[in-house]
Image 1: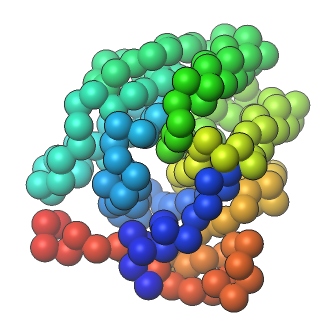
Image 2 (image 1 turned 180 degrees about the vertical axis):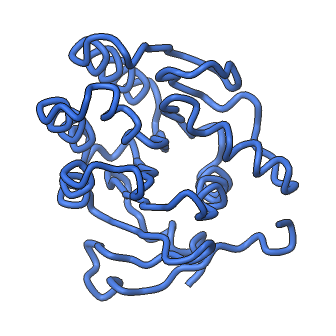
Length: 209
């Protein structure tokens, strides 16, 4: 099945975990999400400029990502996109997560429908020295908006860099888990429609890359 077609199966209120590696073409999945739902609906939560390599790769591949994508900047130096909040992930984690949660709620309350894309939140864990309390807070935040029909959330997580406990908590909480099995292929590991589990998905855009 094509990844783009599979996105039609995701219902409002769901959260989807996409596990990738450093060599996966996960940028194509990010692009497919923006094209499917409309970039004007995308809220990008960008952890320490995680989106920058993906966006540059896409543009070099001939795939256009708008310059005005709504963006929450959690660390990093890049100023691309329409930045609506900039927070310092190196400071007190309670304050960091509180500011983030407040802004997310504000965005959801003002929009009929939002597609939230969170890029590589696992990069926050080493900043807190792998603190278990922080990992629990971070994973609880991930599940806080489950069931809200005004949003769909996609988490991109590099499984090669992720603390095992954090990945396990996300897998447990999310409605769907997709895992890259090759550069362009993903497998459905978890779904509310159990017959989907084990299905292979493929990314298109072969002519451009």
